[in-house]
Image 1 (cartoon, rainbow, N blue to C red):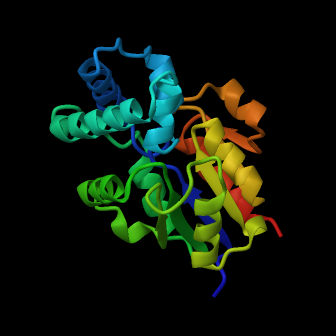
Image 2 (cartoon, rainbow, N blue to C red; image 1 turned 135 degrees about the vertical axis):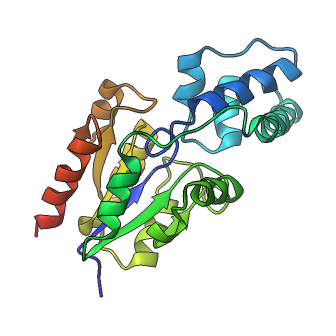
Length: 223
């Protein structure tokens, strides 16, 4: 049966507050190459892009070998810091996912710039794997804002673009959603300012999960 509404979630900055491990790994990676760490806002501003592209934006002067070394240093630092730098779910995230997963006709999916390994770790850590019908990640698709992973999620769930919504905290998420022709909800508790979400064309903005659920209910009731 075709979903009445397919809700596709970003992860970092939307469901998971992963700022601490991301900032720590970024600082360690830059230090490994003898470079100063980027400012907090700059480092968080590229979250959502695939890792090589994100780091390339932070260090555009590095050649291909330097970029590869930076990515390797980041991955090593991120793995070493796991457990020391917590990445909790945002308040209300678990309850919202539980409520949405229980609603007839609503299908949940993920489209994230995380690797498959990182995504599997998060879902296993919080026992959320069974909530999502399909998981699309950076290992299998071009980086956001290319719509490939979102289009793959629609194909996997059988949802038409007009009956789907992309929920994310960055302009990359919103641009991806618009490119795929789906509804978009920009959440303002993540890593891009609300003004950036509006400029990217977010159809709706939510300040908390208490705002998000009614917005999704309205979309589910359309048509």
